[in-house]
Image 1 (cartoon, rainbow, N blue to C red):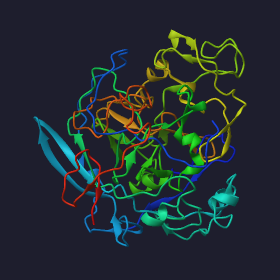
Image 2 (image 1 turned 45 degrees about the vertical axis):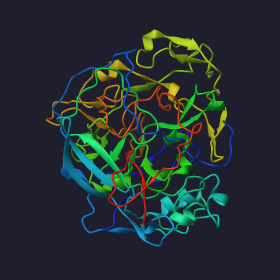
Image 3 (image 1 turned 90 degrees about the horizontal axis):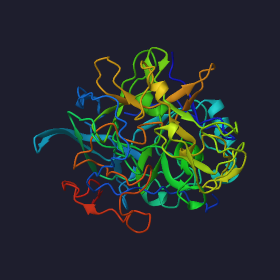
Length: 474
């Protein structure tokens, strides 16, 4: 079975096709920028609901899976800020370090990928059929050609953010997102991760690293309907036209994927003929595997959508198509619903930050989902509330990226896409993330500057970043 194309959910007017790739050796403005949480603080805990279902501790970090740049390869298209020097790609080093009796894999990476992309004619046609192709592309259509490979960051005709002129990458990303920068980051991943004893929320910003050193983000994009913080949009849906042909983009210079990327899958040789290999590691130290549970069998998310179409449904709001209530506890659907600020109906239009129009059908918002414990109890390929499991296959506890596949082999990212709304494992004090006050939200106390990160500090090439991320001085 081949690892085929991935489509964004069919609620969209035009799905985005993610392509066969490999590695080379609410109304708002037209600007797209995700709010990224500060990753420098210690993890706190929330004891409101304990939903841990097992205590697997036999998962260990495998340092051999990281894609390490042993030849000092640099990007052909992305540069160190203000220079014409290419940024190094992938992971720079993986070392073992013991801190307070805990052993860690210390991963140093630039956050710059080296994907190589080849599009079919159907995929070219899909790009050119974007709703805003006339303005998304400088000439109204992509300059990419069918069956002709191009490199990560190479100009394929997009009308990119002006900031890309200083970093390189202009023409590879759609309007809105900034282009990636070398963030010279270092992440500590415990080699013997531990299950959390309290609830540990995931949130905005990097929740882990993919094996090529780019960032793992979860479902959130920091946006909500009417900016009320109630009906929170899903990045893999609302940002479908804001990602590149590998399904990624940058926020504050940090290149990341919110969902399974075919380019990454090709890089780790995932063909769907066996259990997927490791795609990355979450900040708690547990591995994130690809979408396959076994030969031709996908790992399955146990998150279900609420039923707004049946007025008598216990998960709906009493009127067909109306969103004016939220679940009391998305981890316990039996707790019922409570009145909330009105969201759009399931037939209303929603305008994204990049000005694209969507129908806000069921599955558009985080609040449209709940964990179905009955699915998790089916075991085997069914995952838990954290989007992981220990299936007794000697892999220990691990996460999966989740997708669905129809009879034609078309694949669609499935909520919660990467890790769940909560981490399964404990976040150590030196974790790359901080625990969040609310699911998908900013850290306790808010993000400095009223929702945006402060400027990242500069650092020398051999300097240890104080907060885990800095921009190297050339």
